[in-house]
Image (tube, rainbow, N blue to C red; front, top):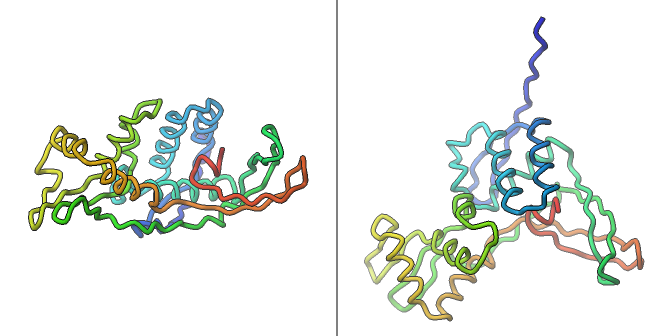
Length: 235
């Protein structure tokens, strides 16, 4: 006699940046084991890849969402919602203190208290009076194209991958109008000050934030910390 098959509960969440609705299920034990194995290895690229694979396995409307092209903040939000429905609303973290380097305190963080830091940077960056760049937020594709040890070339390439279009007066050049070589030549021709304007867009882009307050188990001093992103929430 065949064993019964379990039906997964279905949930929906609204993604904070694109406002799209994602339909998902909790992750399964076999999927959790793969993720835990990656976390134990402490290799950022492996953890990232395992997280993306888990999300894709759990989301029902992946094609509709165009998951690979969602802003990373949306992807991280979705992962946290899947984690909440799969393993609970809290995560136990070891957080430090400035009393000494080795100080660690176990803190239970409520994942439901996540908020979104809204970026103030406009997506259109003015390079000169007539020339400017329209940018998008990084996505899974732009991250997966980086190497294991992220270097200055990876950062440069990631920034270039987020260029949606370049305008020159009334003329707009979309990604279909120029190839990667032309784009890289354009990016390399920027002055340091112009390039810093582009970097500012990414430094202030929306991100997940969870503010926690705890008492250091070693010195008793109250610590206030702002956790940002997946690596902080589950590190």
